[in-house]
Length: 192
Image (cartoon, rainbow, N blue to C red; front, side):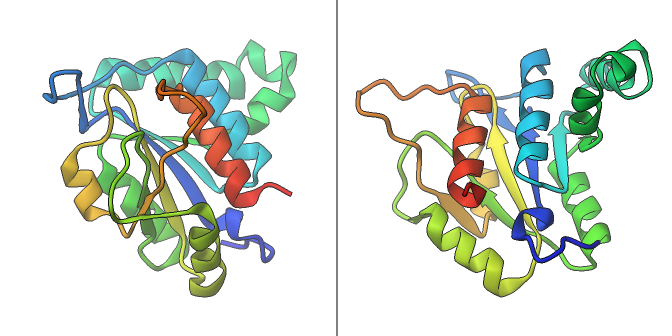
């Protein structure tokens, strides 16, 4: 897949609805939201990413995403808002994280690096500048993973090549929407 020298062209977002925690640290499936579908697709297109995966094993949630996607790609919405169509062309459904990794591997003929994000600080984090340098020097694709609910499971963190430092505001409150976090990280990685 050509990316015209732009490292963002080798990057995909994976929004995981499983495996994630609930507020009691139980592993759950979370619900897909319409706002996340649209806004993360738009951010992904704005910064030149190659894919946006929604990862959910729940058939009803997959059907909802496909219904919304069809509406904007070929239904009435495609003619009404061609820019939304362009963004949602990046959207792919995956039942598991492994499915998304396999699709990325097929696209680039090499497994992607995996980077995770989270609101809690960890001792092994890297900043976006270091990740950008890695993207520019390694030439491998990157799957940038975001969690829903109360965050990604430890299993996902353990699998990652990189853990990005959390976004910090200037207050004790630290509970951004995932679509806001995606936009901030993409701007830090690929913004001008």
